[in-house]
Length: 191
Image (cartoon, rainbow, N blue to C red; front, side, top):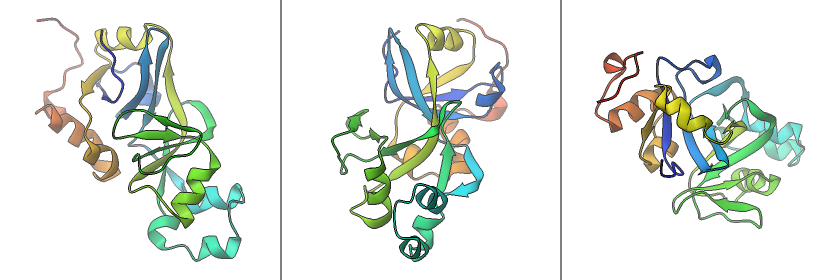
């Protein structure tokens, strides 16, 4: 199987792992050694960007309170069951630090505090998504899950990652394949 880096995975109804039910995952890394991705459509219900800034003491509390609502209240995704206490930011390549990893030509990953400060106080990347935790697979595990009808693969689109409202990303990802939830089957098969 060729690399899935930069693609999306869409959980199928037959997904055996409940933690991934209904999820859309952006694949950051995929090789013979395994894969890593971030769930991009499952926000924490009671956690916002300002809460992270405050807990990590990444700015004067008064400055955090004065942030525009769109920044202060932005969603934090539950990126997956691995390293749940670690933050990962997917963003456009207009922000770079010494610790920025280019996941593709259009998306970078930064997992250090400097990107959070930039998102709050500038200069911020044009588009970004903050997640706590990530998703990981060992060698051959993702390929097996795909063969067992656990995932669909969807080509990358910037709008799906950064623009489509979170609650619409699953259906929007399916629409990229010209299918709907109603057309999904729990049965695996081969043509």
